[in-house]
Length: 287
Ligand code: PXL
Image 1 (tube, rainbow, N blue to C red):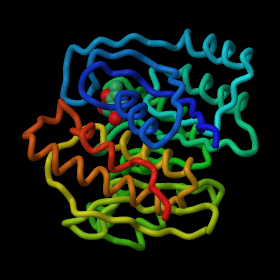
Image 2: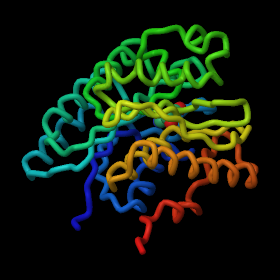
Image 3: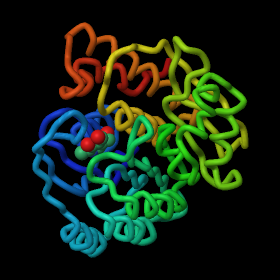
């Protein structure tokens, strides 16, 4: 079988483990060839750092896409995450329209913020644009903050003052509401059915059903887990796993990485210590 190929549209942050420094190793170990389109180069990620550098790659993206088109490249998946400017919304949307074929899997991780707040480099216009980009996706992977932004709801109201946090029916409704009437699949991250758990609520557009996947919650500040989740999910879907199975693999992997990160005593800035555990994602041997 030829190695499947994915166009991965995320930033490259030099230190702190997120985006392309997670996306590429994870998809590679899962048997996918990654073709990166870096949206920006940063010295570090923006969570818990000040003074980071930021090189906006907006002008390069259409040029690289045109070159790829001239080469006749095809992608089994297009997977986008953190964007560097408002203009990139339209550029990534054009990329999807240009390269999508009937079999292409389009995953949009609508990276915008966490804990009720937008990330430092995200403007309100970018958040509004992300909703339009996400409308093109087969699968989206918002956290609860991004879910609130996509639905145009107040984060506090969405969680019903915290009550919705551990309410399976409320989380199921949220995932369904994000599916645009069942047209796209949703893996809503940070969905906890009880205080000691965490995981995802998955609405699968193929079955029309929502199901939760859960693991034990590791109470430690972690950065870059959303990128790990969406990357493992994309790798799982590309090798034919169902949404729920791919999400369960992602949730279990993040749990193992979180335990290791705590054991190593790493700070929020360092990100999640995932590299020694990449072998957990190797393709399963049948028989
Ligand atoms: O993990 C999301 C993310 C991606 N890229 C950069 C970030 C963040 C979150 O803070 O700062 C640069």
